[in-house]
Length: 378
Image 1 (cartoon, one colour):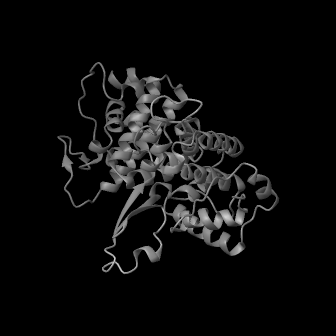
Image 2: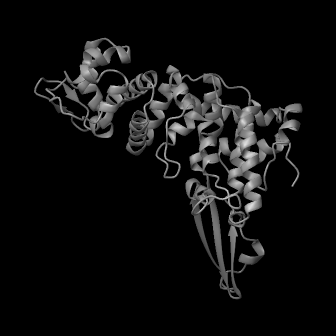
Image 3: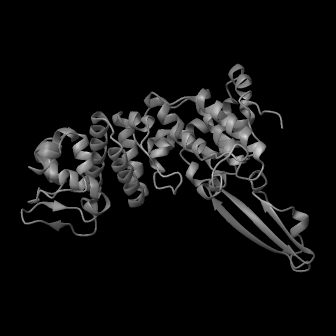
């Protein structure tokens, strides 16, 4: 199959991915396509407006993360990486070692061209295009009829085959396969070899290239368990991106929050620099405060401590690492991390209870990394 033009690619893959609908994946896109895309980078103007409007609306729900009125080529090229990865999830591609080698090489070349995002605009725009990635899935159809059966992967069966279902005893069974189940076929079973290369690391790199998407999909299964990457750490250094991540993560629920906390603890055990520990501590404390504000006035009654301070019913349960860090630091030390007056913070989060200086509290690795452990347990 010849490489598609940029307009054909946006029409078949990017537009339905952003707006919703049926994405079309047919073969692989080679890095050579970028040459033609550079020379003619702009898709059809009407299509461009449609995609940008839908992406802008989606980003606006997360916060003020920047304007959107164009589709830079690096974002489109990153979508092409996902196109190739999805193409390789077809059952016929599983055992084709030569095709897997080609796909791996092409994805690596495309990712090297895309590079990591360095600005708020790049982070936001890539998520605008790939934010619905986790909703992708493939519908497979198994058709039984009087003469036998047939399977159709990701495409509808021919109308002639399913015509006259009663007379021809036709029965259709549809099964939707979610994105990460599809991607499981990219992992080499057993040890990866030159003959059967593993595409898992390429998938990780493609996720990391859109750090806001990577972070929001943190509750994904192994072997794609979320890890903090330099791109994600850089992204949450921006207040707007950090706020957008908080809102999206809390909307997804406890599993995503817990996955991020586990990733933070893993980063601390690996000896993350102090600046990284401080950034992650700020990230978790701010999300804790936002979560508590979201529970104020909830239908369920808050609990009351002996000092009269109120605590939302699910805040400490959903964020054990962040809550433990806050309680051990105390409002006096936590307030500067949140940029809030101490009294305001005390109204948002519960008062400090009497905490024994246990040897290994849950938040110890994070507080130690940020240089706060001694003060926290003194």
